[in-house]
Length: 260
Image (cartoon, rainbow, N blue to C red):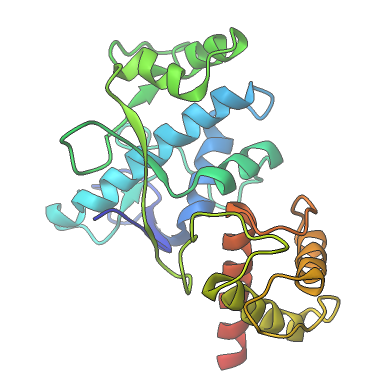
């Protein structure tokens, strides 16, 4: 089973460099860092999506196969582009790339009959060429020609590749229920969001306290809107995929701080 990890361990150098530092990095932050280091925020959004999906699938292949740990190393992946992806400690993250990662971070690329995420290798396609791999600058050209993300990926990796979803995300209380929560929704998922918003509201008093009753009414929608304003999300008053996981992340963070 493919599980989205909460953290990965990044070795900041080639595998054989024992002096290189290991960094514990949140999975989403790692993907945002790599994408911001390797592609441009001004590229077409479908090109950004295609590249983010390739980065995530490659990374999850390293996680799933325990590639380096099976060779006796104590890390998940390296920052060496000779082996893995370009990762730079403490670099700035581009907003457009961050939004795409938040939208897609449970996704990876599959082929029929293959269990693990595909090791989607690529190169820049400008300074270096790589037959049978994705060209990043080539993907930019395809994006300019209005190719979708999956069409860009199939152009390079074959028509049988498809986007898969991991059902389990480590480090959050409950994974995305798979449906938009909005006024009129009800059930356990609504109760979970209400409980988490109330806990977050203790640390962020702008977020109003609400009754935990499993009914998504006007007060729950208002609490969600305030949460979205505070944390820089589109203000809709509805809990979509991105809002669900942001609520979960902040809930876990404030709960851990309270336990210290």
